[in-house]
Amino acid sequence: MYCRGAAAVILTYDVNSLQSLVELEDKFLALTDSASADCIFAIVGNKVDLSDDCASPPDENRPEKAVAGCSSKVRKQVRVEDAIALYKKILKYKMLDEKDVPAAEKMCFETSAKTGYKVDYLFETVFDMVVPIIVRQKAEGPPQTVDITDYKPAKRTKSGCCA
Image (cartoon, rainbow, N blue to C red; front, side):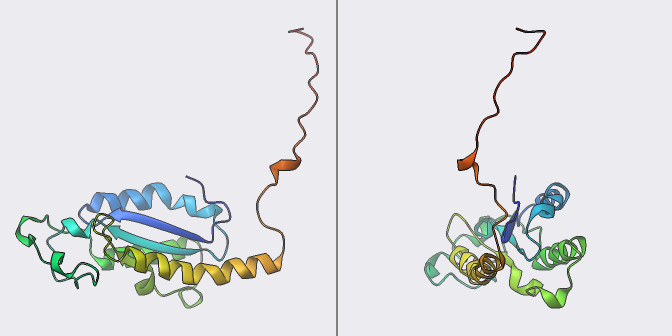
């Protein structure tokens, strides 16, 4: 995993597995160190299609699938409040002030990659926030990337012991 200079980081966990949220924090919090200073973070709970939480609003693209088969679903283990707590922990870890970044409620999502539930909304929201950051970064100076097209390999010299 690599995100040097990233303008956005999307951290995803399984809403039906508390362990996935714990592992997300344990394994990937330090990954955020290499992101840009003004990077935005989105915390995304996935697999809502598998949970028994049928109170969620139907997807406007698939209203007929919103409540079908609720009795065969698994119990949701991670609440939105848990994701908001992780988001706030990231802000604290990054030493960011909550008033200078998007509100936690705007940056914590629940989606279903399988059904597409709120996936477009997630990416549209992140995109709308990232574009101004990228425009500002470009105006401020050179990118934080390395141009390898001008790479010239060093001349090899014969080693004394292996010649």
